[in-house]
Image (cartoon, rainbow, N blue to C red; front, side, top):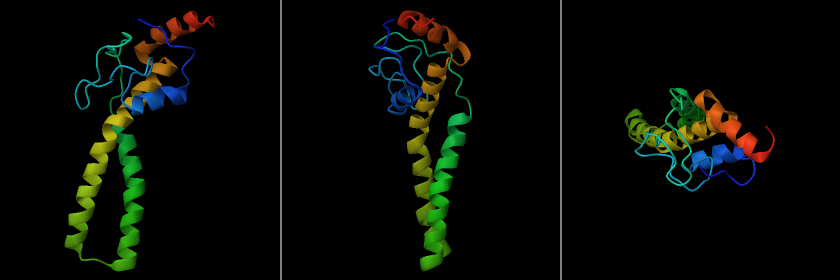
Amino acid sequence: MTATQGEVTLGEAMRRGFMQRCPNCAEGRLFHRFLKVVDHCPACGEEFSHHRADDFPPYLVIMIVGHVIVPLLFAVEMAYAPPMWLEFVVWLPVTLLSCLALLQPVKGAVVGMQWQLGMHAFAEAKLRRLQASGNG
């Protein structure tokens, strides 16, 4: 496994994960399929098979999309009062597509956060990084 150049900050690790890249090297792809995280980074070899994102990414996506879509829906309703069928035709697909578009990047950010903070089995990787940088 190749060490990164310097310590990766929490924000940088989450940004790399959001961009669906390895939080360690930013080179390898983080996902094998839509929501299936790779077992290890193809570029640097960092292990990801033990991540535990579980239900946190969908929860965050629901919170984000809900806080964007609901105010927009209310604003359109108050300004134009469109018929209910039109609201369903517009807002249901917009909500569904927004959730699907954000789910993988948010899961990547959560995996990046877990990696940088040394959560779960990432503690060993964090200890290796600290020792390699001379801080451990």
